[in-house]
Image (cartoon, rainbow, N blue to C red; front, side, top):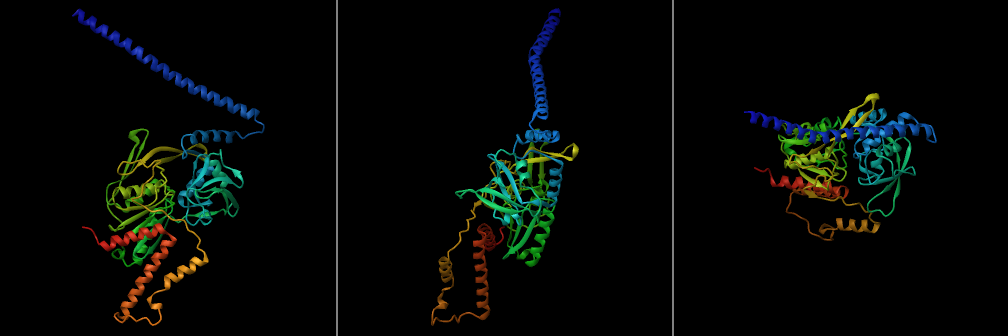
Length: 446
C-alpha cells in the first residue's frame, strides 16, 4: 500500500513537472506575442506623432487615422475597406438603387483599377466601357499606387461634370481616353421583355428592388404572351452584373427552385457557417431556363448561376464569370463610419468554391466584337439577302398554297429574319433563345 501511494505521488509529481515543462514555453510564447503587439502599437504611435509634428505641411489627424485604418483593411484583400461616414451613407443609398457617379463596378488588380462591369443604361455603359478594361489615369492623374477607395474617390464628382479616364483594353495596341459626363445613376434592377415565345429577364444588380422587379417583370411578360402555356422558356441574363446583396441572390435563386440548398457560407470559425435552402414554388412553372454569364458577372450573380447550374435547373451559357466567391460584412463603427470586412467564402450546392475560379458555363459562347462593314460589303450582303427565284423574270407562281398558308410562311420568315438580326446585335442572347426553341421543339420530358 505504501509503495502504491509513493508511486502515485511520484506519478503526480512527474505530471506536474511535465506540465510545467510544456506550459512554460507556451505561456512564454503568448507573452512574447502580446509584448510584440504592444511594441508595434507603440511604434505606430511614435510614427503618428512624428508625422503630426514634423511633416512638411500640417495634416488632419482624423484623416491620418482613417488612412491607417483603411490601409490595414485593404492589405487583407481587395474587398475589405474602411468606409468614412460619407462613403457609408453612399453605400446605403446604392443598395436602395440610386446614386451618383459613372455607373461602373470596379476592383483592383496589379495596382490598377479594373472594371468588373459597366451598369446598363449608365454614362460608363453609353461611353463604351467594357468589363475587363483597366483604368490607368483619371483626368491625367495616374491611379497606380492608390488604393481602390482613393481611386474611386478620384472618379467621383458633381453630377453633370466631365471626367476623362485612360483605358487599357485587351486587343487594343495603345491606351485611349474616354470622356464621360457624371450623372445620377438610377438602377432598374430587372428589365423584362419577350423575344418570340421566350421571356428575357435582364438582371443588372442585386439590390432591394431586384426580387420585386423580377416577379413583376416576369408576370407582365407572361401575361403579354397569353399565359405560361405560351412561354417556351426564360433567359436570365446576368452578364455584366457585378452582384450586390446576398439576400437578394438567395431570393432570386429560390424563385426558380422547389427545394434544396442554394448557397452555403463558411467563415474562419466553422460554427459561424450558414446554409440557405429553397422553399417550394417555381415562378417559371418548370419551364426551361438559360442563364447568361460573362467575365463581368460577379458575386451574387455567381451564386444564382451556380445554384441553378448545380440543381440542373438551368443551362448556363456564355463565358467564365469573374470569380468573386467571398462574403463581405458591413459593420457599423462609431462616428457613423463602417468597416467592410471579408468574413466568409460562399459555396455552391455541390460544395465548390468559386473564389478566383468563377462559374464555368455549360456551353461556352463568346460574344464577337462588332466590325464596321464597308459600303461595298453592305451592298453585297443586301444583294445576297434579296435575290431569289421570285426575282427572276418570268418565274412561275406557286399555286399550291392558299393565301392563309402564304401569309403564315411570310410571318415565319419575318420571325426568322428578326432572329438573324438579334444574332448580329447580341449573339449570346440569340444563342440562348435558340436553345429554348430547341427544347420547346422536343416537347416536355417525362
